[in-house]
Image (cartoon, rainbow over all chains, first blue to last red; front, side, top):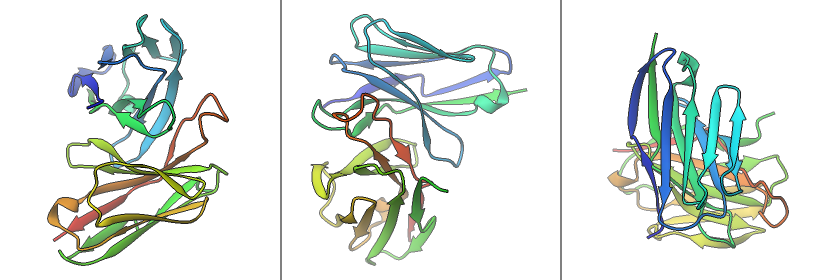
Length: 112
Length: 116
């Protein structure tokens, strides 16, 4: 069935190191969304990528959408303890609907 | 003001009981969802409601039934609870993609259900 593969499942870094999580789909995506869930919290929308090869930045976060629109990545430069949480990519279930299929998430831990 | 609210935050109950979780959004969105997050943090869509009409019903047991009295509310009723139903249930809302290009979803705080 339709699914989004996300790796790694877990990542531990020292504060100040960079971090990247990757998502891959077997199908061409119309768009991809990224969410962050803090420990004990709920998913919070970060960004949506729509265009082939699109790159968007939010401060230390850089989001990329592959040229073929089948993969995406989130890169965090110089991680801080506030970056701790689980990062999810998500794609729409189908063209007609708005429900999302989530990747399994990458849980980031940061030690100071 | 809380955009998407859920009650209760915690729910502990015995196997076989029937329970409901309530969700309300004050964002004026016309689509609401229920997601289940298991102990491994996997988030899975359960239901989606648009203008009071169920538009997605994933392969969830029919013990689960969403009820939407109006477009600001989407409640989840669960019959004959089983151990495997223990999870965190998130309500979410968004605008339809045909209205806006960006249909980001806004999640409620979640309801942690524990079935004993």
